[in-house]
Image (cartoon, rainbow, N blue to C red; front, side):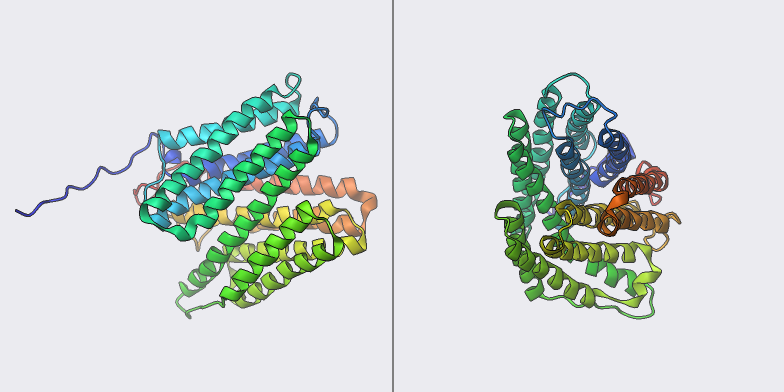
Length: 410
């Protein structure tokens, strides 16, 4: 007798924002980007009671931009993308809420510490517990899905998540043992791992988005150039750069490795170029983000010889790679996965991306040529960042919180 397989029960969640991880994590990341930058402007100008004896305020800022904002975007993207890559359903509903609450409670601990609520590091002890639960649970569900379908090519991403856990652990260990050097290592380890993850994911999705976004116009089939040799060269140069800058500071090696990463990825960008991208903000923003990362690696290469502060190059890489790239990815993914057309994004996207370019110019380029007005450039960059994510929240949070127009779950 022929057996009949009954259809499985369709997934449900108590609210559309818990349907898939990108909805809640992109929303939270954007809101956090606004709230945290406003708070940082007060911390930076000395208007809060942050306990600087326990933690350097610069490291407080750096930790939360990496392990708070950036990791929320990574969680939203990966927990959604892995479902597409493997076909395995990712956490949704109350399970997704549980992962998110761990992220949220950790952030509340860091925000409370920045405001100077209480004395000592007790808020950071709480944050440490929930941060480890957050990243550990995220890594576990991704590993389980990859293992289930034997997609071992995704192990590189899992290795980066494991190292991110180590990096975050080092940050907390440094705080609790009063060893700021450990905290610095953990912070930079996390930062470069995020950049490595963005380079890896960007290599996959940017050319794909360009080909798909331009070919769908029906005028021509667009194919961009990619090379396995470039992929390997970029990985090796970046790994060498990462080790040199973090563990073995040598100006000759730093210049060679940073220049290698820049040149390889500039060649990549040339192969990805098509004049049609300038008609589509969701494409030129990704291209400009990659270009900004290349320029930032050039700044790393030149810094030992021109004498400007190392943080200029660091902020260039963070604004282009973490700021612009994540913003562009969230803007596109949010449309596609909520059943909306990627060809008709909100009219505000050009302003959003323009503001992020202004952040890069004001925080990175202008201080090099005019250090006398450094504080002014910082304030303009902070204002542009806040305005950018306020516009994202206005434009995208309503669609992230509503059901798909086609009625599908997602």
